[in-house]
Amino acid sequence: MKPIWIVDDDQSIRFVLEKALAREQFAVRSFSNPRDVLSALDDDEPQVLVSDIRMPGGSGIDLLGKVKQRLPGLPVIIMTAYSDLDSAVSAFQGGAFEYLPKPFDLTKAIELIRRAVDESLREEVRDAAAAEMPEMLGQAPAMQDVFRAIGRLSQSNVTVLITGESGSGKELVARALHKHSPRGDAGANGPFIAINTAAIPKDLLESELFGHERGAFTGAQTMRRGRFEQADGGTLFLDEIGDMPFDLQTRLLRVLSDGQFYRVGGHQPLKANVRVIAATHQNLEQRVREGAFREDLFHRLNVIRLRLPPLRERKEDIPALTRFFLAKSAKELGVEAKRITDAALERLMGFDFPGNVRQLENVCHWLTVMAPAQVIEPKDMPPELLSGEVPRSAPVPAAEPGALASAAVSPVTSAAPTLPAAAAQPVPAMVGQSSGWLTDLQREARRLLEAGDPEVWDTLTRQFEARLIQTALEITRGRRIEAAHKLGIGRNTITRKIQELDLDR
Image (cartoon, rainbow, N blue to C red; front, side, top):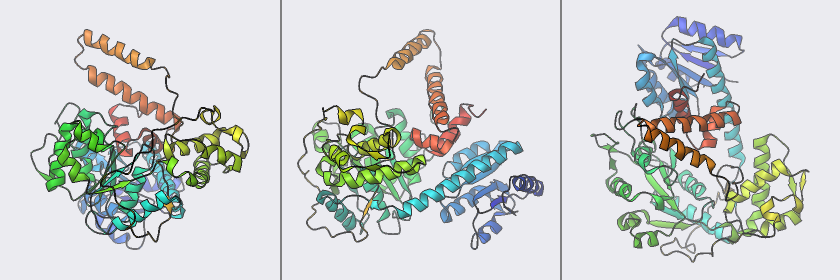
């Protein structure tokens, strides 16, 4: 394992951390200023970097930015005095693993560094696995058309609108478009930032997209960079764009037109060089006719349209996808991959999969956990596949107007297939499951409102967020990064929330 690098102009801090880490069998290398760190990176690299925020030889924040440019996946812990905390939190949201307030408890500091090391090692395993994985899976003609389209679109940074049913893998296509885009401004060497506009409450979506200034609204305790700023020089993927609130569509149109925007509560115009890829499962032309989607925004997004086929149109890909997801689930769970019989594959190919590739991945995850033997038989299938009532999804839509024609698309030479669905999720609960907790929430809200409590929103929101995070941490046995992934939030967000909600006790 590579050494831990400590950067601090205070020799006593370096000495204490060096000795404590040595007792834990960690190799350590110390520096007194950022300049020496950047020079050392030419020949070596750390497993984790721990840096002070204020040093005579330079700022820890500046060092963070420079190190992240060279080693994007490196966990960086910033040490900061309590007086620097507000500025540190807002600045570190762009990339620090976590911050360590001074004076710190040595035991907690070593525990934090150990967590960063564990995350770094997991990241290395994921990177190695990703290097071995194909980029997209699919031999069906409909998917080959998609691969050709990606090959053709890789020659430019044109705006793309991806259409397709939920679970069909729209984000993976967006990631492939980003990966194969030209190197340079708003290209493959920049970040890929994704946001699901349907999953974020309307009141928060504007702040998520454009960021906010400190004090812009209740709860805005620090300045926050929005997704447009985070995606500067890369790609911003706007999933489920058809569900974006109408008033925010106007702000989005303005950014797409001139690349300029304001943070919520801000007065200084900001610019971001971002390639926008949008996706939707809805018929945007119909949304325009209904007055729910701006026509000028539709035309701005609909430069090139790429239709992603549902799984029922590419059933010949089900065997390969199934074997891939069984191997993937086994690796995630640390067990031996299960094999599947031809008869069981026939059963899968007879299912309509209204949830598309994501549902198939969930089924494979279920089979990895629940199938009793190493060889999966038809009788081992989950209840929805054994019931005999195979759910039928909506009729196959006709090719949409404006869709990219496949006849003139050149093949992708690197083309082979990658993960065609999002990360594994549990099999969804059955419709009709009790929603008693919502009734309890309504009852509690009514009680507080009638009592005249002036902080109903903050009180209930804090309780809700705390319970979500506590449950996720219980499931992941305290692993914050994994808990954040399961909750669908960033690792910096979960760290900030744990501190705000006083859960780190």
